[in-house]
Length: 154
Image (tube, rainbow, N blue to C red; front, side, top):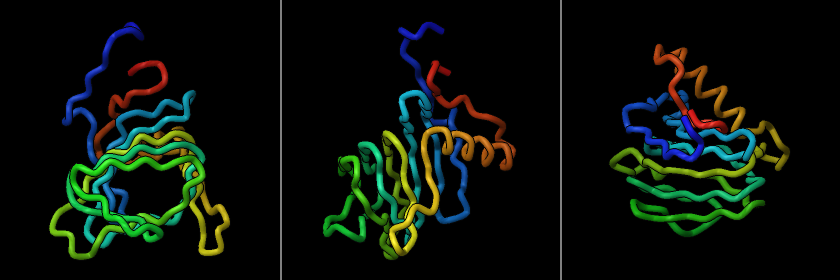
């Protein structure tokens, strides 16, 4: 494939995998050289994602459901767009009373520094780490290794 060609990934080409935490993920792209990862997350009602700090910019688009950050007053609903600057720190929560899964598309540059209650870095999630984890979860679920878009194409 030429790097000047467009790449199409159909909905069925990249599987959802369950993380076991009330969150399902579908990794669309992991460009390790650029430090970019594009992921869709589906969150069950009442889900919570550990407080984290971003080292790069994040763009989020909500496809269905609702979610918010504990640290901010607004609620993201279907059709909402969110920009997060590098250095932003927050805890993602999904309302318990959601009547559907919350589906969000994130384009993330850099890493998530996952923080403990004292603000110390407990773990790091970046393009390489999410790629490895997603492939391992897919293999464990009997889904093989999906053709995720990577640094050099597919």
